[in-house]
Length: 230
Image (tube, rainbow, N blue to C red):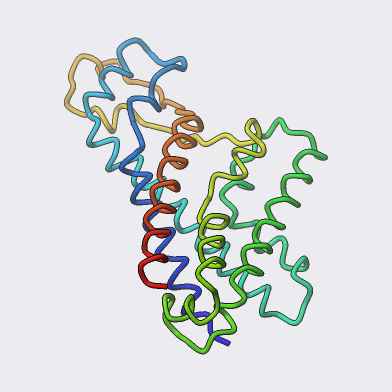
């Protein structure tokens, strides 16, 4: 049993998805709306490239790291002699959606969502078991060894996604970050003379839009590659 092929394939998908999300994400859309000091949004938008580099990219890098850490923890749980559920805290401790749940959710609602998130991870690991059982150490040979073409296409269609929790629980998550206009707008002059407060940006809607478009693109690209190689 080898994890090398599984990790290679999953890491590639996550990297492709994050790269595609970065291309799709609109700083303009994310900054529109909300209560901010007069002129701050306009000035921030003039630094679009800086925002993408200093804000969007780090947020997506953090998301990538969380997704991979959770997947590795789920693999560890699957290979453990203990029941999968006993690793719940470790797995969900890395879950980007669990970490982004709105604080105002009721305890029962939170528990329902956490149960669903854990089941989602378990389902993913169960679906990659044919790859784990393969003797191949690279993703594509393992995929060919473990799946028929139809099974591989179904796997890509069902598992190459990461927005399902947002669709299933549309009002349960809040993705946000804090910006320091003084740091980002250094040198603008009069706008900064009196100092500006930190700005809280809720980018949930824009993240949902960008992530959906990104996962669709990656799924389509992977489907074509599966059809070509298998």
